[in-house]
Every structure is written in structure tokens, then in C-alpha cells.
Amino acid sequence: MKKIRFVFLLLCSMTAMLSCNRNEYPGFDKMDNGAYMRFHSKGNGIKPETGDFVLVDITQRIGDSLLFDSFVDYGESVSVEIMEPSFVGDMMSGLLNMREGDSATVAFRIDSLFEKALGEPLPEYISPKTVMYVDMKLNKVLTKKEVEEEYRKEVAIMKERDDVLLSPYYSNPDYTVTDNGLIVIDIKQGNGRAVTSEDVINVNFMLSTLDGDTIIDYLEGEPFSMAYDDMALGKGFNEAVGMLKEKGEGTFVIPSSLAFDSVGVRNAILPYTSFYLVIKIDDIMTIQEYENKLDMMLEKENADNMKRLAEEPGRIADYVKSHNIAVEPTESGLYFLEQKKGDGESVFKGDIVSIHYIMYNIEDKIIESSYDSGKPMKFVLGYNEMVPGIEEAVTMMKVGGKARVIVPSQIGFGDIAIDEKLPGNSTVIFDIELVAVTR
Image 1 (cartoon, rainbow, N blue to C red):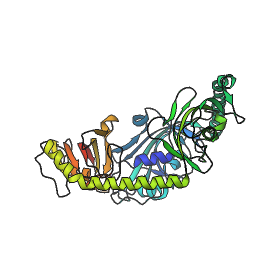
Image 2 (cartoon, rainbow, N blue to C red):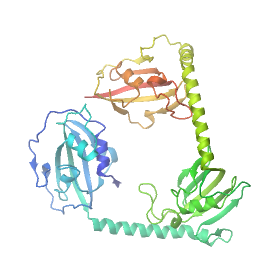
Image 3 (tube, one colour):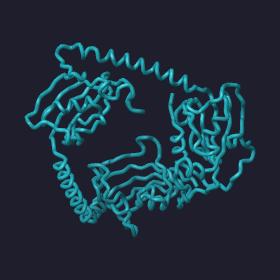
Image 4 (cartoon, rainbow, N blue to C red):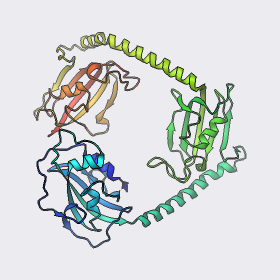
């Protein structure tokens, strides 16, 4: 069962919104709590209350434009926690008027959603009179008491399972158990200094559950910097670090009581999860030493960025020559190479644009691709939601068209580093397919 919060549904609705001049709800009845609703079928089940969970089928739409469909996006009904309405007449207001088995539509204006629920001004490309319709079929109500009881049962099972997983580690005579319960499997002590409470440590580590699911893996590559007194990974992690010296390494089992105990981490780590930890201390620095290191790294990064910026025209010229490119750049410096002419609509400011893309650096190495996810990327043209080079390129295309564009850094990502393959002030190459336009 997928669990989804109301705020997430609100964010989903922002991905595609159309202007509409209607500010009334013909065919809808006003409920006592202010919701405008149209019931399609009536059930005879219980009504939800604040704190309950409901299993519901949901679609969100503006006119004929579908924004969200729980079955399309999740393949099943979603679980929604009933909370106090964010504004009069919102989706929660609608659900509070329904019973199990009911099917209904609630209507409300977009400006209320943005200003009262999201706390943001309405984007200028959306009419304040735009109406959103939320279709809902309420399949089941899980009362707050039922949810709490089910959660207690699940947590009890998790604790029992955790005890079973920990048992062989505690009973192994080759392992040492500290007074706090940390299990020491192996330590290879380094010859550097010990860590103190005000130090910053550079570490490589891997944290996994006792049944083998990797949670964090920084075991290879550049060390991860963190303050020793940072308790984000729990008391057991800090105790393990405190047993090692610089250049030392160790393997430990951290019981859930020294990690996230019976609480866990929402949507990430279940309650009563114990961990297997492999850790290496690369070096230990005072806070001042760490700050000096950051300053030096920043100075080097800025110098490298300025060097790349100065060399960029030459690199672009070499790329154009080596790829036999004959087109001239636009005034902004964009090279637009049409690969397939589209036969659909053109793109204008305020349109919701859907594109597929493959992004390369100037050495023709792929950085990322929207085709990997199977979903095109959407953005509203003309409102700085996309790099200027792509915005300019799509205005030169029609739906169905494909193009390759060479985007200089000043109309690309600027001095922002994407990764090691695309540092700041880098030229970026895009293969773009203009999939759809909505207005």
C-alpha cells in the first residue's frame, strides 16, 4: 500500500496547471464546512475524522487536463492521513464529508491552494480563477485507534526480529561488547592521534542493516567529513569512532538502542533497526584546520572555474571544428543543430513544456538522461525553471522535433558544478526531444 500525504498531492498538482476563467462551480453543492462537492454515488460506511487514514482513489484535474491519477502513478489506492483543512473547501474538507463507499468530486480555486496551503504567491502564468477538480472514491476508513494498534503490532514484530538478528553477535565469544551494548567485531588501530569532542573527522564508512540492505556507502572514494559530536547517525556510531585513532579502521554492530531505537527515520529506516558498520578514519582535524582546508579548496575551485571560463571559447571552437559543425551560433552563443523537424505546436512563454534529453560534457561523455526514467522533464517556459540555453532551444522547435545544442556556460549552469564530469563553467551538450506542449 502506498502512503501519501496531502502536501505531496499538492506538489504533484503544480507540475501542470492551465489557466481558466471559471470562478463558480455549476452542479456542485456547498457543504456545511464550505466544500463545494458533487456526489456520484453514495456508500453507507463510516465517516473519517482528523487523525484517521483513508484508502482512496484520487484524480486531480483542471478542465480536461489530468494532473494526477493514483492508479496511473501508483497502480493502487493510496493511503491519505486526514488532517485539518489547509483552507476552506480543500481536498481534506471534501474527504471529511464522505463515507466509505462514496464517490465525489470537490472543486476549489488554485489561488487558495497556493496562498493558503503552500504559502506561496500564485505564479503569474496561472489565472487566480483557475479551478481544480479532485475526484475521489473513498474505499476504506482506518480510524486513528486502528492505525495506532496496527502500528504497535508492527513495531512489536520489528523488535522481535531485531532481537533475533542481534542474538548471534552478542553470543559470539570472539566479539567484544561495550558497557553501552556496542558490539566490536574487529579493530585495526591506527598510529595517529585519537579524536576529541571538538574535532572534524574524515571517514570512509559503510552502514547496512543486519540482513544486508545498504543504507549508506562511503567506503570507497573521497572521505566524508563530519563533526565528531554530530549525533545524526546515533550514539553507537560516535562510540565506534571514538574507539579508533587516525588511520584506524574497525567493524562493529550497532544495536538499534544505540541508533534510532523504536522510532526509526520516517520513510528511510524502520524502528528497531540495528546496523553493521565498517569504518576507516582517514584523518582527524581541529575545527580551525578544517576551516583552513575548506578555504584552500574554495580558492582552488574558484581559480579552476576562472581558468575554464577563459578557455571555454577555445574548447567550443575545437569541438565545432572536430564535429564538422557548420551552423553559426545565436547571439547568446547557442549552437542549434536540428536533427528532426517537428510537425506539432510551437512553444511560447507560459507553456508547460515536456522534453526528453541526454546531457553530455564537451568530451561527449554522458552525464545523465531523462530516457533512463522513462518520463520526460516538464517546465514552464520563460520563468527561469530551466537553463537559458534549453529555453532558447525549445523556442526554435516544434513538438516532435529533435535537436542537439551546444550550450556555453553563461547560458548553461554557470559556475555551478554538476559533478566531476561537469565542473563549474563547463560547456554542456544536450540532445533534446520536444515531446509535448500544454497551455
